[in-house]
Length: 119
Image (tube, rainbow, N blue to C red; front, side):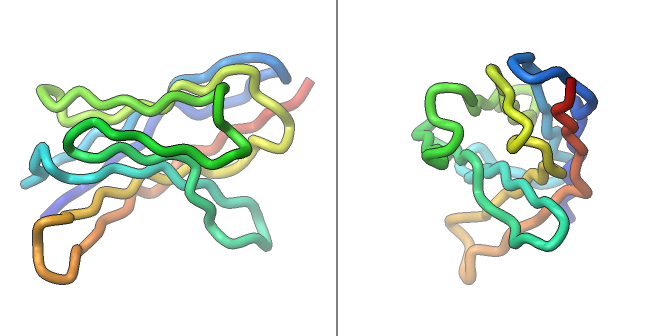
């Protein structure tokens, strides 16, 4: 069983920064891919950033140059550094891990952490 716990959300002014954390509990392997998604009411969940077990990263165009995803395998933790935040970045941010080497590529989700960007 895998549990993901996100933290670090909160209220920030436009132009500010936040760092989200996603700590994984259970049998999570270093070759797991981790992704950050976000969702606002009435919209589908969208992928923001991802990092593979080898450290390759990818980002949504809307956050490139502002957000950075990283991982600390020793701590079983993935981070999302968010800079130059905009009101449109406000959302609930979810962490996902994917067992890329297992049949069916099972994935697990955290409960989310809310980010509010407002003056």
